[in-house]
Image 1 (cartoon, rainbow over the protein chains, first blue to last red):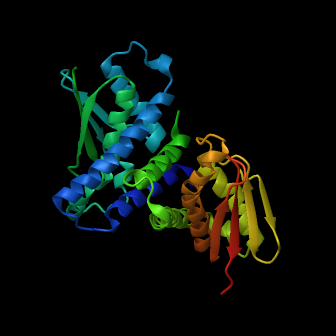
Image 2: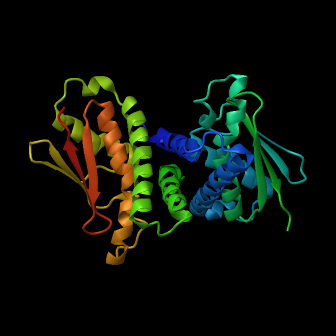
Image 3: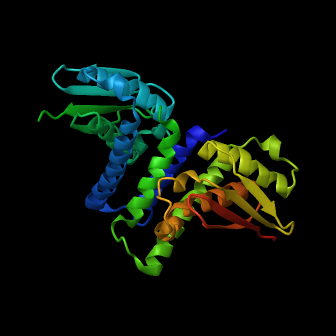
Length: 159
Length: 159
């Protein structure tokens, strides 16, 4: 039945609810809503990270952790794998999903591009939270060139 | 991995977010938050209902629809079946779950009973929304006697 979509439906409703009371909240309100979504994603990512098989991740290299997220975390959350992972080998990774499930309900017109950040903020937090639990501090941003594809850029923060 | 829990984690964060800005919003604020959760559940339930196999439900009796929710909807959403279903054969149904997954993270002390409604409102909406899509108008309420068990009361509204 519909189990895999329950998370996606709830995510859609959550975005709708945040913007329901003020559909055009201005840059300040928009950023506050995006920040709320990112924080929720972060905490869910942390919680998911705590359930990952720890022995699989012990002593792995940073790149292996990113590969793990692209494969296992993405499968768990979105029933598919990330389409590509690139790195500059200096702590920056670009994760590309050519058909990101949370963007699929949006029509593929250019006029919807500006709506896309709403549907990416939670997942940026999800990646940052999972990385945090695995001991890696990062900054995660997302960009869209052609719907429903998107890129997540992960920049590792060296302490 | 952790796919089945993603919905539960997100639900927990959503409840936390609604109460984050005012942990003690008073009866009015409390009811507004519960109503927001119930509405989100309703729309998710509607969307889930639209994905149900229609031919399975055509021309069924009301009781069969309720049985379907107790078995298939519950399995899809919570990876378990409802523990019991009772009816007075006059349009009132009591669905009992002896170990409701969204209540499991709460400790089983009596002192947490008053927190329980926060974690039941979304699911009341979910049931009401799924029933609505299947052509049945209802009022759904929930009650807790002993955590983590709970009862959902469905009262069919005859038009």
